Image 1 (spheres, rainbow, N blue to C red):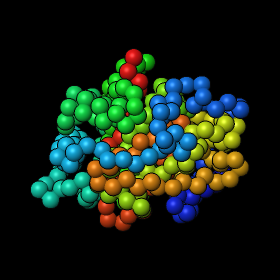
Image 2 (cartoon, rainbow, N blue to C red):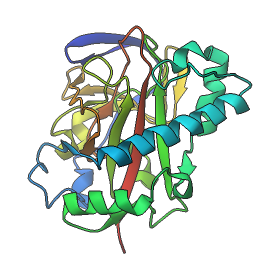
Image 3 (spheres, rainbow, N blue to C red):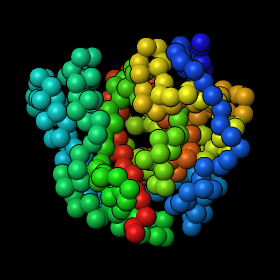
Image 4 (cartoon, helix red, strand yellow):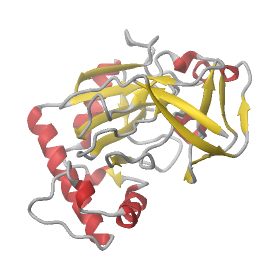
Length: 273
């Protein structure tokens, strides 16, 4: 079965394996904690805002660069003095990248974050007008994540989805901070307002998704209100953050750049108990 997405009006097509389904008339966000309900962007589901100080942002970039170098080494690859986050794709083949991706799949504990994690908790809390933390209240998780998406490669990122189809990711708010290679051709995609749609409005895969032979943990959106998903790229700049509801349809951040790897910091926050 062929499925299509559009992101910034660019068509992307895949071959889908597996069953599809639609849900009931419930709106999941209305059943759960809505961490963006005290914001002026709660109806859109996302916003872009300044992140931290430029000095802190550069410290995060440098620290994550070292963490990635370590994972390349563990995967049997090699780097040199010319290595940058942007040219990551020049240092790994498909096999090495898959190894690195598996090693970073579950992220790093926040004790390894390049700056005190409380600085990030405080920034997001002040922006949401309520106290939040990276420490999940329902599962043993207090991690940060890094997404690496090589240029002109459709396998390195998730298809359009809602995080909250995985129960452990409900009741949260998501953070995306570009570290390199994120622009109008590569940044994360979203469907504005989709966090308020009924489940019956969205056709999706019944379990995870298999697209072009690649298996994904998250179910993939097939259609929204009977139409192909139309995503836009909010495109935060350097030292800016994209905050969004995990109930929002998002993903599809395919990197259409030809010469830059896109790397982003990704985190989730839950209300402080």
